[in-house]
Amino acid sequence: MINKTKLALGIAAATLTMAGALVSPQAMAVSKADRVAEAANNKVDALEAQMQAMQAELSRLRAETSRPRSSADAGKVQELDQWMNSVKSAPAKEAPKDHLFSVRGGWMHFNDNRTGTQTLEGANPTFSSDRDASYYGGAIDFNMNNDLFGLMDHTSFGVEFGVEYAQLGNGKANGLAGAAANINQLRINASPKIKFMHGSKFRPWLIPAGLDINIISPPSNAITVLSTGMQFGTGAEYELLKGIVIGADGRYHKAFNSVDGVDTDGFTLGGSVGFKF
Picture 1 (tube, helix red, strand yellow):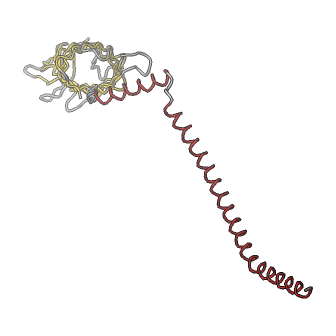
Picture 2 (picture 1 turned 180 degrees about the vertical axis):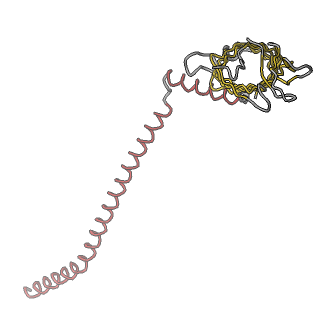
Picture 3 (picture 1 turned 135 degrees about the vertical axis):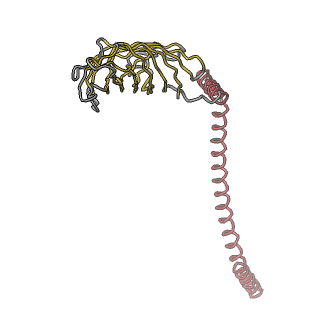
């Protein structure tokens, strides 16, 4: 009986041993799978946390962008929009035409009679002419600025370049009957010019002091003499039509000295018609 019991116990022990050997690998596989699943769950949790953080940041940004602006910012934006609309709707501005080309003429009066000499018929008689003459010519005004170099608003500063021709007539020879000489003068000038009331149709102007170069003929046969001096003048312009200007002026001319007894001092009164460009 005891032997049978021992035999049964031995068989049971052997059976348990074999079962343990069979179950142990399965248990190990189950344990490893649990660890892999746990790691995957941890990663999923981390990703979910990151996504929640990103969603929170996006919500914050949306809230800031949808938040109403302050009244000052809204006013600035509105002002900028109005300015942009005004610029778009404004017509293209035409470039200002401040330069002027003019044709002028008038009356010239000398302080002294014009005298000279010319060889005629073997003699050198002296010629003289009247003090009065007519002249004609032209000028170009180049505008530099419209604020007198920042000193005075609505006041233009420019430079005038002009040329004038005067026919003084045929002078009569003293001491030689029937003899006459053609007496004339060409004047070239460059002067600073100050014009007032910029933007107005009526514009008075002033020449404080300008340079004169006088080409006089005769005083002697086939000789042309240069005489330099200064001019001072004032006048006014009026824009009669768009780009067409009429004017009147008075000028006094003073030579630095007489040349061979020829005196070019005197004054002029005249008018002009000009065209802006």
